[in-house]
Image (cartoon, rainbow, N blue to C red):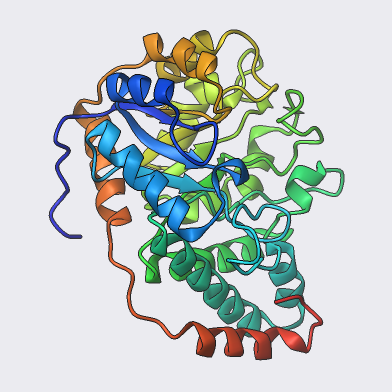
Length: 350
C-alpha cells in the first residue's frame, strides 16, 4: 500500500448524511464544527454527475478533509442510488447468484465486470467507497431485506461473488465495505423496521454465517448488523454489544479494519441518537453512521463524537488511503459488451 494519507486535522468518528443535492447553510456550519470522517449519499442527494461532484467537493471543503470517505449503497437492483438517464441501473446481486448456480466461472467474471463499471461510475463523481458486498447468507425464512440482495445462499457462492465484487470495485479505485458483520442472513425481520433476534447457537453461526467475514477479514472496512444474537449477547444488538464487536468480529473473525455501524437511527435500535452513538462507540465500533440527513439528528449526534486518535485514526487513514486510489482508464463499452454476452444466456437484465 502507498504511504498513508495524512488528514490536515483528524476528523471525528462519524459518517453523516445530508438533506438534499447541496449542503444547506446549517449543514455547512455544523459540518465545519463537527468535521465528520465521511459523507454517505442517497437518492435524495443525486441529480446529475456534475451536481454530485460539486456536492462531494463542497463537503470536503467545508470539513477541510480532501481524504473524506464518501459512501454510497450502489449494490444494483433495488439498491441503486444513481438514477437514469445519467447512469446504468446494474443488475441485482441475486442475478449473479442465480448465474453462479449454472456457471460459476461466468458469474464470477460477470460480477467483477459489473462492479468495475459501478466503481467507475462512482469514482468519476468523487464517490470513493461503496457499501458492498453484502456477505449475509440468507436462510429460507430470512427477511427480503437480505434475500432480495444476497450473493448466494451458501458460503461458497457468497465468498466467490464477494471477491468478484471487491476486485471489480478496487480495479476502479473504489474501496468496498463488507456487511453486515457478523451476518444478517438469519434475520426474519427487516432491521430498518424492528430488531431481528437470531437464536442459532454459536457453533452454527461459526460454521456458516461467520465464514464470509473470516474470508475477507483483511478488508479495510466492515459494517455491523443490528441483530440480537441470543447465543452471544442476549441483552444488546450486535452494533451495541462489546461481545459481538470484540469477541466475535475482532477476536474470533480476526477483523482488524475500520468497523462502522449500520445507520444508528434504524428502528432496530432504541434510544436517542446520541445515546445509541455512545453505546456503539463504547462497544468498540470505530465510526457511527447517521443517515437521515435531518439537521436535528445531526445536531443531536455531535455531542457524542470524539476526534479520532490511535488505532481508530490509523484504520481510518488506511481506508482513506485505499479509497484515494486513482481510476484506471477503462473501456466501458467493451466491458459492458462482455458483461452482456456473459449474462444474456441466463436472461439477466444488464
